Amino acid sequence: MRLIQFTSESGQRAVGAVADNSSIDQLDGVETIYQLAQRALQNGEPLETLARSLLSDNRHDYQRIVDEGRLLAPIDHPEATRLMVAGTGLTHLGSADTRAAMHAQNSASAEEDLTDTMKMFKMGVEGGKPAAGETGVQPEWFYKGDGDSIAAPEAALESPSFALDAGEEPEIAGIYINDADGNPRRIGFALGNELSDHVTERQNYLYLAHSKLRPCSIGPELLLGELPEHVEGVSRIVRDGKTLWEKSFLSGERNMSHTVANLEAHHFKYAGFCRPGHVHVHFFGTATLSFGDGIEPRDGDRFEIEAEPFGRPLRNPLSVVERKIPAVKPV
Image (cartoon, rainbow, N blue to C red; front, side, top):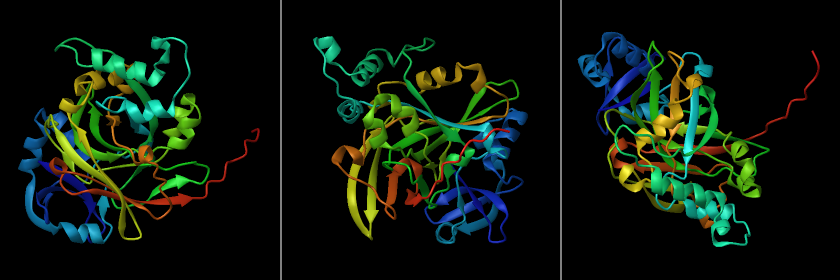
């Protein structure tokens, strides 16, 4: 089952289930997926079971929702600061090559010849898929922002004017809510564009944290249930109506060096990430970047990411916006 969030023609928020590629069936009694998840937790029933019980005869034209700009991100929180966007890198087989080239270093011995990137990747390959009940090696981790960093599908990804690059990263994101006791509960999965500043990162690996503080987008559809072991997708950049760059990508645990459970365990092991009622959007990483092929996205380009299990493609134009750096003054 796949869900979306949207606004009705009258401007009211709504949740809908994807009936087919052209139709959305609205759910009765809920305006947000956050409300739906909270109700499922309170009732002690699976979210999908609750969603199916709320299906109505109120059917909407999917394309009209898209054309009229009424799509919303498939998760948000009434208080944006109670939603954390974070992620893990070097999690996919083949994901280290571009990153290693960015972080190349000269060393004397064979072991030292490995960049920190390659060392981290090697650790994941060797210990990222532990046996059930065990915890494997921890992955690279980064913070991206709060709920305000998420752009809706079809909306602009706003890159600040001080950024040196605005490159797409086609990924799958896990969507979570913490229950009343602070236990993380997975809502589902969504396609994501984890936009990053790769030129800034390339200057020095210690700039990675800076490079990730950029907007992102997820959706448009939220996939309930388990993530398929093998996901095939396509990432492209469209410029002036023509495809500038296109490449396939693979995800799912069959193509990863870590299990989803291991990535989740190392994120939620921190007490600060287990506050009741908080929402988490966690990107699982990628192995495909246009940056690795020398592409420089520019204002007006459109990113498109699609994979069959997730329904419609995630599309966002790039917009470079002036960002004045505020001067700090004493109180």
